[in-house]
Image (cartoon, rainbow, N blue to C red; front, side, top):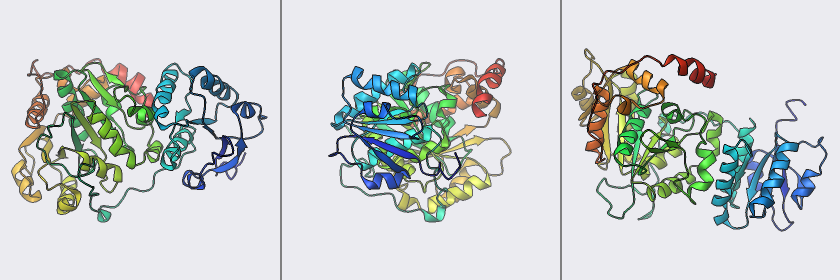
Length: 438
């Protein structure tokens, strides 16, 4: 089969004639309609020569035995074909996806998801199973900083409206978004450290969400590379926000980012508001790690939703020039309303610029610094256990604890001698991390 044949994935609809698939969905997913059949039994009876990349099954029976059997049979007959279940009632999407996750954990239904009947939900579901098969659209080029635009302003009470850092008093959790001016500043290390510290003092009360969609690394830091990712758990989040992977050491709830960069395009920015609102209703703290490209709408949404913003900087010229450009747009980005907490990471003796001079350059009051110790941080990542837990007396751990307390997080007191033991990381590096990177 030549490349031209594979250019447009083929989609088959299983539905009564009164349940059409909007042409908008086909266009947005870049697929062609192969046809329509009335039942899944008709699909299973098709000959193997007909190529199908995805099947969209409208109104599947909600009894588990009634839809799981045909789904498993489709996977057996056509292992490269994805399946999107579209129930008649929107409230059934979450329970369906919970059942799918149960099967996926047992090695079944790897290319199956559930979706609502709206166009955005259908596009997300179809793109998800296509991306799993390596047929999804790749995300476009990163937005240029010159294209920065104001964050969306919403009606009062909407999650995307800007918030002051004062306590809300409504019983909902607080959202802490961690971001930086560029990659490599250590924002994921800071985000994971803050979340782990808070979770140690608030068991089951903290969740970390990896929204750095094209460079997700939270799962690497927490040794959860095989756990379900954001796109796996997304359909069930509204039904059960606590049904997400767990890092047992804290204990910390985790929503890992997409397992592969090409899956980033399947996350619609409009979903971010709902994700964070649901998690804030179930956890005391929601820590969000977002990408460095603030021209991305996902980053805008996470910034607009936050109660506090941790801005991670490093004392290098490249980082600071980009940070200055961001601060020149602070009003448009919603960074000038009292929520911003700048943190100078990776500090070291002899640096040309200290926190005071950097603060003067950026117009920021930098009160928090985190020292540089790449070997200790790398060892903690390779061990799959945050430095703040493995060596709570280390200077980095102490600095992050001070930051967490300044942010209003309840954290446990320091312990340990702070001397990281860097032995015994070679096994995980050679046997686990390197094969995953490959």
